[in-house]
Image (cartoon, rainbow, N blue to C red):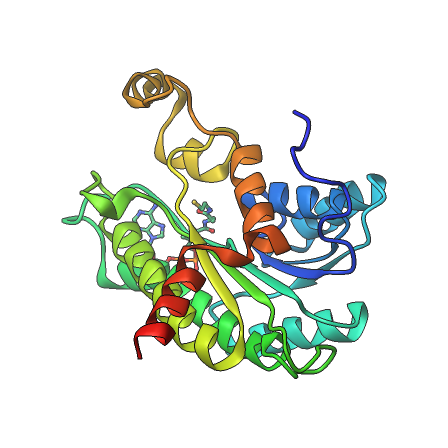
Length: 263
Ligand code: COA
Protein backbone atom coordinates (compact mmCIF):
# COMPACT_ATOMS: atom_id res chain seq x y z
CA UNK A 1 0.00 0.00 0.00
CA UNK A 2 1.19 3.50 -0.77
CA UNK A 3 2.00 5.65 2.22
CA UNK A 4 -0.15 8.75 2.71
CA UNK A 5 2.93 10.53 4.11
CA UNK A 6 5.82 12.32 2.39
CA UNK A 7 8.85 10.05 2.10
CA UNK A 8 11.05 12.48 4.08
CA UNK A 9 8.65 12.99 6.99
CA UNK A 10 11.17 11.46 9.47
CA UNK A 11 14.34 12.62 7.74
CA UNK A 12 17.21 12.91 10.22
CA UNK A 13 15.30 11.24 13.08
CA UNK A 14 17.00 8.38 14.90
CA UNK A 15 14.54 5.73 16.09
CA UNK A 16 15.14 2.90 18.53
CA UNK A 17 12.57 0.10 18.36
CA UNK A 18 12.45 -2.69 20.94
CA UNK A 19 11.20 -5.95 19.49
CA UNK A 20 12.09 -4.42 16.12
CA UNK A 21 13.27 -7.69 14.58
CA UNK A 22 9.82 -9.14 13.91
CA UNK A 23 6.09 -8.49 13.78
CA UNK A 24 4.73 -5.00 14.36
CA UNK A 25 8.14 -3.73 15.54
CA UNK A 26 9.80 -4.76 12.26
CA UNK A 27 7.05 -3.13 10.18
CA UNK A 28 7.49 0.09 12.15
CA UNK A 29 11.26 -0.13 11.56
CA UNK A 30 10.67 -0.61 7.84
CA UNK A 31 8.15 2.18 7.40
CA UNK A 32 10.10 4.63 9.56
CA UNK A 33 13.22 3.83 7.53
CA UNK A 34 11.36 4.30 4.24
CA UNK A 35 10.24 7.70 5.52
CA UNK A 36 13.78 8.90 6.24
CA UNK A 37 14.57 7.73 9.78
CA UNK A 38 17.77 5.94 10.81
CA UNK A 39 16.90 2.77 12.66
CA UNK A 40 18.22 0.85 15.66
CA UNK A 41 16.40 -2.35 16.56
CA UNK A 42 16.77 -4.17 19.86
CA UNK A 43 16.01 -7.84 20.44
CA UNK A 44 17.16 -10.92 22.30
CA UNK A 45 17.92 -13.15 19.31
CA UNK A 46 21.01 -12.30 17.23
CA UNK A 47 19.88 -14.28 14.21
CA UNK A 48 16.51 -12.49 14.07
CA UNK A 49 18.25 -9.11 14.47
CA UNK A 50 20.83 -9.89 11.77
CA UNK A 51 18.27 -10.89 9.19
CA UNK A 52 16.04 -7.90 10.05
CA UNK A 53 18.98 -5.49 9.68
CA UNK A 54 19.94 -7.10 6.34
CA UNK A 55 16.35 -6.72 5.10
CA UNK A 56 16.24 -3.06 6.18
CA UNK A 57 19.61 -2.29 4.57
CA UNK A 58 18.49 -3.96 1.33
CA UNK A 59 15.78 -1.28 1.19
CA UNK A 60 18.44 1.43 1.53
CA UNK A 61 17.65 2.06 5.21
CA UNK A 62 20.50 3.01 7.60
CA UNK A 63 19.95 0.34 10.24
CA UNK A 64 21.72 -1.27 13.19
CA UNK A 65 20.75 -4.18 15.42
CA UNK A 66 21.64 -4.29 19.13
CA UNK A 67 21.21 -7.42 21.18
CA UNK A 68 19.50 -7.02 24.52
CA UNK A 69 16.67 -8.03 26.80
CA UNK A 70 14.41 -5.21 27.99
CA UNK A 71 14.12 -7.03 31.34
CA UNK A 72 17.78 -6.25 32.06
CA UNK A 73 18.57 -2.68 33.00
CA UNK A 74 22.19 -3.04 31.88
CA UNK A 75 21.00 -4.15 28.42
CA UNK A 76 18.56 -1.25 28.19
CA UNK A 77 21.35 1.14 29.13
CA UNK A 78 23.92 -0.29 26.70
CA UNK A 79 21.47 -0.39 23.77
CA UNK A 80 20.43 3.24 24.33
CA UNK A 81 24.12 4.25 24.54
CA UNK A 82 24.99 2.23 21.42
CA UNK A 83 22.16 3.87 19.52
CA UNK A 84 23.44 7.34 20.42
CA UNK A 85 27.07 6.45 19.77
CA UNK A 86 26.44 4.83 16.39
CA UNK A 87 23.66 7.01 15.04
CA UNK A 88 24.40 10.37 16.67
CA UNK A 89 21.15 11.05 18.54
CA UNK A 90 17.99 9.43 19.84
CA UNK A 91 14.76 11.10 18.74
CA UNK A 92 12.09 8.41 18.88
CA UNK A 93 11.74 5.38 21.14
CA UNK A 94 9.19 2.74 20.18
CA UNK A 95 8.49 0.08 22.81
CA UNK A 96 7.18 -2.88 20.84
CA UNK A 97 8.84 -5.79 22.67
CA UNK A 98 6.30 -8.14 24.27
CA UNK A 99 5.98 -11.63 25.63
CA UNK A 100 2.91 -13.73 25.22
CA UNK A 101 1.41 -17.18 25.54
CA UNK A 102 -2.07 -18.57 26.07
CA UNK A 103 -2.65 -20.10 29.49
CA UNK A 104 -5.55 -20.23 31.91
CA UNK A 105 -5.18 -18.25 35.14
CA UNK A 106 -5.43 -21.53 37.01
CA UNK A 107 -2.47 -23.02 35.18
CA UNK A 108 -0.32 -19.85 35.08
CA UNK A 109 2.42 -19.77 37.70
CA UNK A 110 3.17 -16.49 39.48
CA UNK A 111 6.55 -16.57 37.75
CA UNK A 112 4.83 -16.87 34.35
CA UNK A 113 2.69 -13.84 35.26
CA UNK A 114 5.78 -11.94 36.41
CA UNK A 115 7.70 -12.83 33.24
CA UNK A 116 5.21 -11.05 30.99
CA UNK A 117 4.88 -8.11 33.39
CA UNK A 118 8.68 -7.85 33.36
CA UNK A 119 8.92 -7.80 29.58
CA UNK A 120 5.93 -5.62 28.70
CA UNK A 121 5.48 -3.27 31.65
CA UNK A 122 8.78 -3.07 33.52
CA UNK A 123 10.66 -3.35 30.20
CA UNK A 124 8.74 -0.41 28.74
CA UNK A 125 9.40 1.74 31.80
CA UNK A 126 13.07 0.74 31.92
CA UNK A 127 13.61 1.67 28.26
CA UNK A 128 11.84 5.02 28.71
CA UNK A 129 13.88 5.72 31.83
CA UNK A 130 17.20 4.91 30.16
CA UNK A 131 16.30 6.97 27.08
CA UNK A 132 15.14 10.04 29.04
CA UNK A 133 18.59 11.65 29.08
CA UNK A 134 18.65 11.70 25.26
CA UNK A 135 14.96 12.43 24.64
CA UNK A 136 14.57 15.43 26.92
CA UNK A 137 14.93 18.93 25.49
CA UNK A 138 18.52 20.07 25.83
CA UNK A 139 19.77 16.47 26.03
CA UNK A 140 22.81 15.26 24.06
CA UNK A 141 22.25 15.83 20.32
CA UNK A 142 19.11 17.89 20.97
CA UNK A 143 18.24 21.59 21.10
CA UNK A 144 17.02 23.28 24.26
CA UNK A 145 13.41 23.60 23.12
CA UNK A 146 12.28 20.33 21.56
CA UNK A 147 12.12 16.93 23.21
CA UNK A 148 11.80 13.57 21.47
CA UNK A 149 8.96 11.11 21.17
CA UNK A 150 7.97 7.83 22.80
CA UNK A 151 5.42 5.39 21.41
CA UNK A 152 4.30 2.44 23.52
CA UNK A 153 2.52 -0.46 21.84
CA UNK A 154 -0.12 -2.07 24.04
CA UNK A 155 -3.32 -3.94 23.16
CA UNK A 156 -7.09 -3.88 23.66
CA UNK A 157 -7.39 -7.11 25.71
CA UNK A 158 -7.66 -5.30 29.03
CA UNK A 159 -10.49 -2.99 27.96
CA UNK A 160 -12.85 -5.83 28.87
CA UNK A 161 -11.46 -9.31 29.55
CA UNK A 162 -9.74 -11.93 27.42
CA UNK A 163 -9.63 -15.68 27.81
CA UNK A 164 -6.33 -17.13 29.02
CA UNK A 165 -4.46 -13.84 28.88
CA UNK A 166 -4.64 -12.50 32.42
CA UNK A 167 -0.88 -11.85 32.45
CA UNK A 168 -0.90 -10.00 29.13
CA UNK A 169 -4.02 -8.02 30.02
CA UNK A 170 -2.45 -6.88 33.29
CA UNK A 171 0.84 -6.05 31.57
CA UNK A 172 -0.77 -4.03 28.78
CA UNK A 173 -2.99 -2.14 31.24
CA UNK A 174 0.22 -1.14 33.02
CA UNK A 175 1.76 -0.06 29.72
CA UNK A 176 -1.22 2.24 29.09
CA UNK A 177 -0.82 3.70 32.59
CA UNK A 178 2.90 4.28 31.94
CA UNK A 179 2.03 6.06 28.69
CA UNK A 180 -0.47 8.41 30.33
CA UNK A 181 1.72 9.25 33.30
CA UNK A 182 4.85 9.84 31.26
CA UNK A 183 2.85 11.95 28.80
CA UNK A 184 1.85 14.13 31.72
CA UNK A 185 5.18 14.34 33.57
CA UNK A 186 7.66 14.26 30.72
CA UNK A 187 5.48 16.32 28.41
CA UNK A 188 5.36 19.08 31.00
CA UNK A 189 8.95 18.79 32.26
CA UNK A 190 10.92 17.75 29.18
CA UNK A 191 8.79 18.39 26.07
CA UNK A 192 8.73 14.66 25.31
CA UNK A 193 5.62 13.52 23.47
CA UNK A 194 4.44 10.15 24.78
CA UNK A 195 1.68 8.28 22.96
CA UNK A 196 0.32 4.76 22.92
CA UNK A 197 -1.07 2.59 20.15
CA UNK A 198 -3.35 -0.28 21.14
CA UNK A 199 -3.63 -2.72 18.25
CA UNK A 200 -6.33 -5.36 18.13
CA UNK A 201 -5.50 -8.65 16.36
CA UNK A 202 -2.89 -7.97 13.66
CA UNK A 203 -2.24 -10.54 10.99
CA UNK A 204 1.21 -11.90 10.24
CA UNK A 205 2.53 -11.32 13.78
CA UNK A 206 4.03 -13.82 16.24
CA UNK A 207 1.39 -12.61 18.70
CA UNK A 208 -1.57 -13.58 16.53
CA UNK A 209 -0.12 -16.92 15.48
CA UNK A 210 0.48 -17.77 19.14
CA UNK A 211 -2.79 -16.45 20.51
CA UNK A 212 -5.24 -17.16 17.71
CA UNK A 213 -4.42 -20.17 15.58
CA UNK A 214 -5.68 -20.02 11.98
CA UNK A 215 -8.80 -22.04 12.80
CA UNK A 216 -10.21 -19.25 14.95
CA UNK A 217 -9.01 -16.36 12.78
CA UNK A 218 -12.21 -16.50 10.72
CA UNK A 219 -14.24 -16.08 13.92
CA UNK A 220 -12.14 -13.05 14.86
CA UNK A 221 -12.77 -11.56 11.41
CA UNK A 222 -16.54 -11.82 11.93
CA UNK A 223 -16.21 -9.89 15.19
CA UNK A 224 -14.29 -7.02 13.58
CA UNK A 225 -16.29 -3.95 12.61
CA UNK A 226 -14.47 -3.91 9.23
CA UNK A 227 -14.70 -7.73 8.82
CA UNK A 228 -10.93 -7.93 8.52
CA UNK A 229 -7.99 -8.37 10.85
CA UNK A 230 -5.68 -5.40 11.15
CA UNK A 231 -2.40 -5.23 9.26
CA UNK A 232 1.06 -4.35 10.51
CA UNK A 233 1.06 -1.48 8.02
CA UNK A 234 -1.97 0.08 9.75
CA UNK A 235 -0.05 0.24 13.02
CA UNK A 236 3.14 1.50 11.37
CA UNK A 237 1.21 4.35 9.72
CA UNK A 238 -0.32 5.33 13.07
CA UNK A 239 3.16 5.28 14.64
CA UNK A 240 4.52 7.35 11.76
CA UNK A 241 1.81 9.97 12.23
CA UNK A 242 2.41 10.17 15.98
CA UNK A 243 6.18 10.50 15.48
CA UNK A 244 5.99 13.14 12.80
CA UNK A 245 5.68 16.86 13.30
CA UNK A 246 2.07 16.46 12.14
CA UNK A 247 1.44 14.34 15.21
CA UNK A 248 2.78 16.92 17.60
CA UNK A 249 -0.64 18.17 18.55
CA UNK A 250 -2.07 14.90 19.73
CA UNK A 251 -4.60 14.22 22.41
CA UNK A 252 -2.19 14.18 25.31
CA UNK A 253 -0.29 17.25 24.34
CA UNK A 254 -3.62 19.03 23.84
CA UNK A 255 -4.72 17.88 27.28
CA UNK A 256 -1.50 19.19 28.73
CA UNK A 257 -2.02 22.54 27.07
CA UNK A 258 -5.52 22.67 28.49
CA UNK A 259 -4.18 21.82 31.92
CA UNK A 260 -1.60 24.57 31.70
CA UNK A 261 -4.31 27.04 30.68
CA UNK A 262 -6.42 25.93 33.63
CA UNK A 263 -3.61 26.21 36.17
N1 COA B 1 2.43 -21.54 29.34
C1 COA B 1 2.50 -21.41 30.70
N2 COA B 1 3.56 -20.87 31.33
C2 COA B 1 4.58 -20.44 30.56
C3 COA B 1 4.59 -20.54 29.16
C4 COA B 1 3.45 -21.12 28.55
N3 COA B 1 3.35 -21.25 27.23
N4 COA B 1 5.76 -20.01 28.67
C5 COA B 1 6.46 -19.61 29.75
N5 COA B 1 5.74 -19.86 30.88
C6 COA B 1 6.17 -19.63 32.26
C7 COA B 1 7.23 -20.66 32.63
O1 COA B 1 6.62 -21.86 33.06
C8 COA B 1 7.99 -19.95 33.74
O2 COA B 1 7.32 -20.02 34.96
P1 COA B 1 7.79 -21.13 36.11
O3 COA B 1 9.20 -20.76 36.44
O4 COA B 1 6.85 -20.90 37.24
O5 COA B 1 7.65 -22.46 35.47
C9 COA B 1 7.93 -18.50 33.30
O6 COA B 1 6.82 -18.38 32.38
C10 COA B 1 9.19 -18.08 32.60
O7 COA B 1 9.40 -19.00 31.54
P2 COA B 1 10.74 -18.99 30.66
O8 COA B 1 10.61 -20.00 29.59
O9 COA B 1 11.92 -19.06 31.59
O10 COA B 1 10.68 -17.53 30.10
P3 COA B 1 11.54 -16.87 28.99
O11 COA B 1 12.03 -15.65 29.61
O12 COA B 1 12.54 -17.78 28.40
O13 COA B 1 10.45 -16.58 27.83
C11 COA B 1 8.50 -15.67 26.80
C12 COA B 1 9.10 -16.33 28.06
C13 COA B 1 7.08 -15.29 27.09
C14 COA B 1 9.21 -14.39 26.51
C15 COA B 1 8.61 -16.63 25.64
O14 COA B 1 7.43 -17.34 25.55
C16 COA B 1 8.99 -15.99 24.35
O15 COA B 1 10.12 -15.98 24.01
N6 COA B 1 8.07 -15.43 23.54
C17 COA B 1 8.40 -14.76 22.29
C18 COA B 1 7.93 -13.39 22.29
C19 COA B 1 6.47 -13.30 22.01
O16 COA B 1 5.67 -14.03 22.56
N7 COA B 1 6.10 -12.37 21.13
C20 COA B 1 4.74 -12.12 20.82
C21 COA B 1 4.36 -10.81 21.36
S1 COA B 1 2.62 -10.48 21.20
